[in-house]
Amino acid sequence: MKAKVTPTSHPRVATVPHGWWLPETDGRAPNFFGIWEHNVNNLTSMGNQGTSGFGGTNYRCGLCRIRKIKD
Image (tube, rainbow, N blue to C red):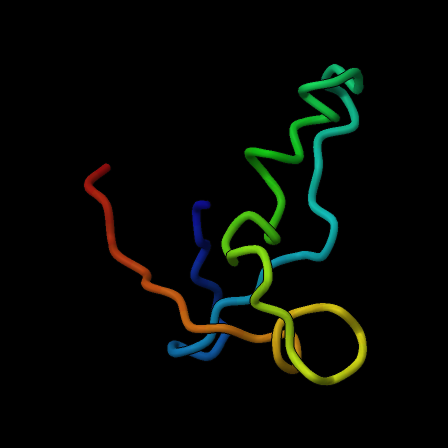
């Protein structure tokens, strides 16, 4: 995914919108509106759910690596 630095974002925090998908793309299998390329859930492994009872990662957070790419 591509990150965007803004004046209001903390320099050590990355946020990702929930349920990111592309409604303008093909919704039929196997594309499903681009969820395999643009969904934050692809950044975590299956079976890595937390104990919060919501079925997601612990407290809805996880470590990530951010690197600057050349323009």
